[in-house]
Each structure stands twice: as C-alpha cells, then as structure tokens.
Length: 507
Image (cartoon, rainbow, N blue to C red; front, top):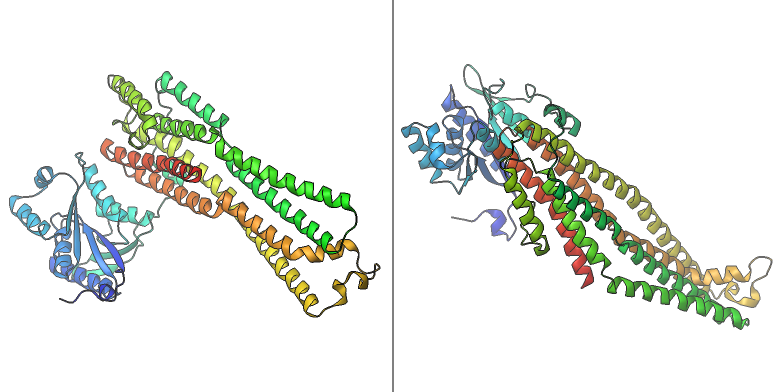
C-alpha cells in the first residue's frame, strides 16, 4: 500500500477531525448510510487526512462507525462511561455489534462519568471539543433528553464549529441548513443569565481566608519593578550613546572649551554607572524571587477558595510541580476533610457562583490587560518606524554631503546666517542618535513583551468564555468537577509560566 501523498513527499499530513452526533431511531438506515458515505468522501476529496470521533450507540452512531471504517478513516470512539456500565444501554446483540466495531477503532477513550443522563451530554461535548466539523443526523426537532442531537448541534454552533446536517424526510435523506438551530447565546452575560440566579455561598474557613489575604498582600508589597528597572537601564545606555555622539562631534571640530568636554564626559560616565548599578540590583536582589513565591502561593490559595464548595476537592496543580506549595496543599486538604461533615452546596448554586466569581472575574481581568497591551503596542510600532525612517534620512543626507565633498560639512564654509554650530553637530550625530532611539523602542517592546502579552491575554479571555460555555452544559457534579479542574489548571499554569520565565532570566 502506498503511503499518503503528504507523507510520501516528506510533509506532515494536513489533518481534519470530524465529530458526529445522531439519533438512535433511524427510519431510512440505507439512505442515511449512503449520505454519510457521500459526505465523508467529499471531505476526503479536499486533500486532507481525516480522523473521525464519535460515540457508539444503536442507530446513527453505528451507521457512522461503519461508514468511517469502510472508508479507511481512522476512528476514535468515545464511551460516556466504563464499558460495564455502558453495556446496560444495549441489548446483548447490539452490544456484540458495538464491540465488533470498537475492536476496529484506532483508539477507545472512556470518560469517567457515571451520572446519567449527564454522561450523554459529556460524550457529545467531547466529540465537538476536538472536532473541526460536526456531522449530525438530526430531524430538526428539540432534543428528547440531555445529550440529544439538537443540544450537541447547538453546542457546536456556540463553539463556531462547521456543521454538516443530514435530515431524514419521507423518502430518504437530504442535506439541511442551520435555520432550525437556536441562535447561539455565547456572550459571558448571556451565558451567566442562562445558568440561573446567583446566590452568595457560605465563606470558606476563616483561617484559609486569612492566609490567602496575607500572601496576596505580601505579594503586592514585594512586587518588583523588573521591567521598569530594565527599561531604565536601557534608557541610561541610550543617554550615554547620545552624549558620547555629541562629544565626538565636538572633538571633530576641535572644540576649545575643555570644561564643557569634561562635563559631557562626566555625564556619560554617570549614565553608564547608573546602568551598571541597576544591573547589579537586578542580579543580586531576592525581592523578585520573594514576590514570585508569595504570588504563586496566593494564586494557589485563590483557586482553593474559588472551588471550595465543589463536591470533589479540586487541586489547581500537583504541589510536586512547586514543592514550596506542599504545606498549603496539605493544609487545604486537611481542612477539606473536616468540611466533609458539613452540608453540601447544591449544584446550581455552586455553578452560578463559580461562573460569576471566578470565571467571569478572570475574563474581565484578561480583557482589561489585553486592552492595555493593545493600546501600547500600536504607538510603539509607529514610534519605531518613525525613528527608523529618520535614521535612514539622516544617514542618507550625511552620506550625500560627504560623497559630494560639500562645503556644508566644512566648518568655515557654513554661513552663520544659515547654519549654526548646534545644527552642524546635530547633522553629524543624527545617524547615530536615531538608530539608538529606534533600538530603545524595540527594547521597550521586548521588555514589556507587548505582542506576546496581547496575544496571550486575548487567548485566555476566549478560554474563559469557552469555560462559561462548558459550565452552561454541566448538570452533574462529575461534569462540573472536570470543567472546574480544567479551568483551574489553565489559570495556575499561567503563574507557573511566569515562574519559569523568571528563573530563566536569572540564569
């Protein structure tokens, strides 16, 4: 068998993933099977490699699995629960067919849920989350229960997936449009409203609140001005460069006022000395490491507090990743075990509170930080372009004057009525000054990491919105716990990234 063209040419394959959802009861199985074959063939003809992902149930799921395997497409099957529980949904004959098909799958994924009917929602979400397309056999009617095709199609629309609808009619199957799909309510405000009223939950243990407050206040107090000091160091070098250029220009014209030259030299030495002093402070202070330690502990505590009323204990990350968090993690677990004897907060109240107090709060934070970075990056780019153009113009003018041996560069030939000494010196140091200014602008961009921060903040803002979408489809403690755990690990990962960057910069 010949390898795919992309692999034969030594290129990575262009892969697209197609998820599936469909009804259990099919009136025209032959027509549905033919339509699935045609749509899968059309996707294969686009020149990309396909991976299919779906659950396995009687009806449309089984027809999709057969079509995928017949077309030679790699198939990933997702089970909503362990096999011994899932087989209860089948007759012995149907389960034998399902096992025969699963034996041919490239991978079998098993979700850890146990609560029906939420597990059917979870498996539908799992197929959409990883997919580029959702192929659905849907009659256009509302879902008969949680996890129905209508609900999964609506979820796919909220995530912006491309949807291929196949609809049965009296004689066969036709390709449908998205008109019957409800308008996606995906803004944070709409999602919060859909989750129901928000109620204030009982506070976590006071000792945990006090510890978090102390860590947060200490982190704020010891927050270093690393970027500001680095920028000051670059500014000192810029000033020293400009002063040095002026001194060279004066020497070139045999300037006779020696005290002024000495003063300029002293100023240059002072700027370079200031840059060395700032660099010494950055290398030898422990303030930055102290701040990072308190900030990590504060953010770890913030996560514990936000998830305190979840039915299962949510740890934002293993304390083995950051050993100094071990004591806090164990203390939180100890307090959590004491809490197990208290009344449990109901699911809807926790979901609404977590969505508003944690996810929406982070969404607003990333939005504000992204706006700040966006407001800064544009002017800095314009500033860099301006200084670069001025540097080019000044260098070109001076080169033209030197090549032409123009009397303008000769001190005695410049009439005082037209040019003065200041202009002459500016003309000579401009090719040095403007590149230095442009480099300083680039330094400001690099120090603030404006581009990276802008992209990252926008990405995290979108991830917080998607977390709200995910929460809106969670109606069991299992599903909420998975969503909350995923969100907390994502947020705490940001803190660990700052930690890694700081350690790299110190080395």
